[in-house]
Image 1: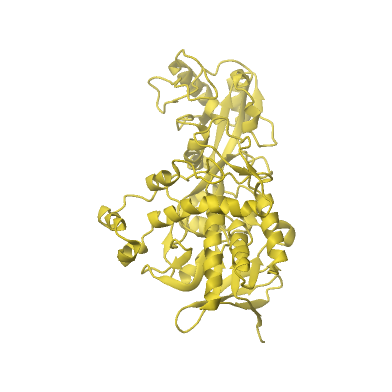
Image 2: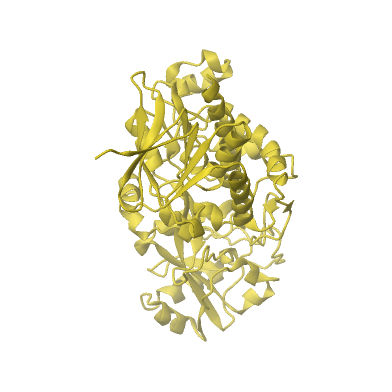
Amino acid sequence: MAIETQVADVVVAGCGIGGLSAAVSALEEGASVAILERAPAEERGGNTRYTEAYLRMKSDTEVCDDFEAHFAANSGGYLDPALIDATKQPYADWPSIVKALSFADPEVVSAFASGCGPAVQWLKGFGVRFDFLPTQFLTKAQPRLLPIGGGLALLEALAERAERLKASFFYRTSAHSLLQDDSGAVIGLRAVAADHRPIDFRAKAVVLATGGFEGNWEMLAQYMGAHAVHLRPVARGGYYNKGEGIRMALQIGAAPAGDYASFHAEPVDPRSGVPEASVFIFPYGVLVNRRGERFIDEASGTVDAVYDTITKAIWQQPGGIAYAVFDARLQDVPNYRIGLRTDQPPIAADTLAELESKLGLPRTRLEASIARYNECCRPGRFEPLALDRLATKVLDPPKSNWARPLDRPPFQAWPVMASCVLTYGGLKVDARARVLNADGEVIPGLYAAGEVVGLYYKVYTGATSVLKGAVFGRYAGIDAAARRRG
């Protein structure tokens, strides 16, 4: 049986912010573009569709002051200083092992930072408006610029532009494998349509923008281990992200980058099915695990700076769950409900013993943990919207801010689990979004944008994932379109 063939200058796999940014950029350069999307049209866009799309920017032209520094501080594990020292040389002089090294490449980070302002201005040209809107963080270390209407507004603006420029959309069509010529250049990809019918898309360039693998439990277990069973995507769009873009590139020799064993975590209420059913008020109470024990400093910094690390600690607890426990003093926190996106009520009780029973915790363990915590609280001024240094004394683990006794009924608790916002593991790219092989060389015709680009290690650089899609999508689309002339 003959396989159906489609031809375009550029094929883009994925219809989120990375894919649509690449597609529109290529279309604006005069290229013909085919866009593949696993989801049906009404659910297109992956995670972008559901996110508020926080942007780590202090204005609509400038990134926050710590943008590159945060990536540098979380650039990898214990990196070989002799290899890192080589990055002081011009990029062309880097040894191949350094170009292919799995770390946050300073050349790529610099290109990322410099591309954010132009990307936002470009998006504004499609009618998207941006502002410093209220966020769900009651305390924050860095400003967040937001598109009015969130990620959905970005998708609709870019998709409309792509449609006007005559892009061809193929919904319910999943990328399967890359096609190469005899020289190793990528010349298209094979996809599978809704009826399991194969289609070959032939092109001068392919842009992989298929997201991560948070919707693929086999890959989660492979890279993250047994605790992966306790993870779920933060929103419905993540279930469409099954990792094929990463896998198909690795199969032809692409270099991996990003921490495959980690992910960006957000604390959510497991009882809720709404997108991002977050519980960001835990710094004002205590977190206990299934044993009724505290296991981490709940308030080591502003909530926007620490929630990723704390949520990963929750993930490592028995059953991958914890409980955020509060007393009546929670009412002292102005507008605390802003930090709650769950649609489920708290579990409430008049006594700690009753709350312990309702939570199914071992008898007397919660009471003992709270009693010990209360003993270590000290007098001081409580300032809920600033780091007040109202800390415990001689307590392990400590609580560094907002530490007040929990002794005023009624008591209440929200269950909290780790949701997977995005996976860290992906592909190594250069500053033009070209995918590199394991020898640090460009794979001709292959590009990556969005979550497929591996750039995160240890602690997520907050409010950068949507920016990463837009910036590297633009780089990929422009460079890919140029290949049709070459």
